[in-house]
Image (cartoon, rainbow, N blue to C red; front, side, top):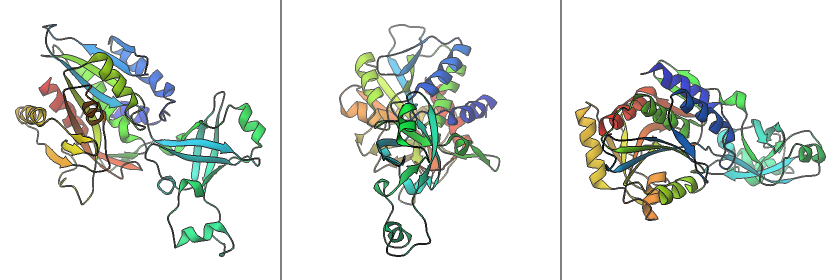
Length: 342
């Protein structure tokens, strides 16, 4: 596995980029693509798009997407005592994060607070007692404790609509053994690392290639919908996670997965066969899956008629939308498969 893939991944995980507040990851990606001498632009929807042209300019256009936003929380209101009431941004759950530091990305200052659920040593007189045994914790039952007055928070630019994410020191990735990486926001920083590998290694493709780091995927693939409507690629391949769960027939965590269907619709079967053939040429196995409770840039753009053919190439992931664990070989094999196809 190239050393740059792991280095890039570790750097990107530490960049805050909740949906709609992605400037930090944008700055990092722009610097990285500039270091490669890659021509790119940022469109009106916030997508970062690089182009690698084919020898034949009349060749079809294939878009490879990896979204750059992460799930998190959004401020609903600020109480007079400085407690911040938050709700989910994308598919986040408070019990997944647990009590601990979160960063609130104010308009003028980033402030840290503690995602809090209340004390444990309580009786039925306290509202928190029921969460110990009887019912699941919801965002309405949690809050961010800041120990600041409301005016301090407003001066920092924290308001309804402010985004929040897991505290930066909690996001530092962890190498689990020799071949796994674990941490928050591997969805979808790991896909961005694959996208950068393509930018580094792809030369003279048989098709025109658009590498797109898409915005606002976790809240409805908003960036990808604009990108595909604006650019009209002939093919779109979304890079994504694939949940490891007993309900899906994923036998190897080091092997890429091609999705046939997800919660938004079916993927193009002919394109999946083409990708499978390219994998075989490169000596790479692939797995197949049909997912529930899942969507990607590819399925959403295809459902809305913005692209005629779409696929989703994914890597098996434990604890999706939580403290995720990914086999590093799966990332490298996704890159090798796409290089063979392109």
